Length: 149
Ligand code: HEM
Image (cartoon, rainbow, N blue to C red; front, side, top):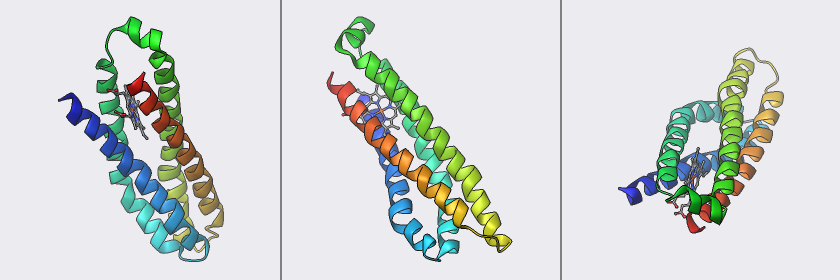
């Protein structure tokens, strides 16, 4: 059971961060050179997979916390501090991802529908994606460090 939940935790992380990396490094550069509509459609279609993955990674993460063992050991090894840091970074990453997916992608689609300039929304999405990817690198490191503490 514990291994299956950990596997789901990692599958969720891969789907979320892998999908984001593909969008931001493959589709977004093309959109900034003019192919905006395919990017806007892909970004909207990716939302259910992204948010299912985020829900999965958070729910399985809470289960993982219950499997860390006695509280004294968790505090003594430093896993508790790393877990707190990881939790704060996950909240920050998910908040930025929400702003990106539900505000900026909607603004982008609105700009396309009204023939307005899509570049401000594209720039905001690129900035937010970079921040979430950097946060994810730290979150993944902390996950590995916690499980080996
Ligand atoms: C609220 C959200 C989260 C919580 C509470 C959480 C909690 C945990 C815990 C307690 C572990 C240690 C599991 C063990 O040793 O048995 C762990 C491992 C891990 N987590 Fe998370 N996590 C969360 C979100 C994430 C996210 C968003 C990512 C990636 C983007 C992630 C990536 C990892 C990785 C790579 C491991 C290492 C697995 C291993 O080496 O066995 N976690 N997580």
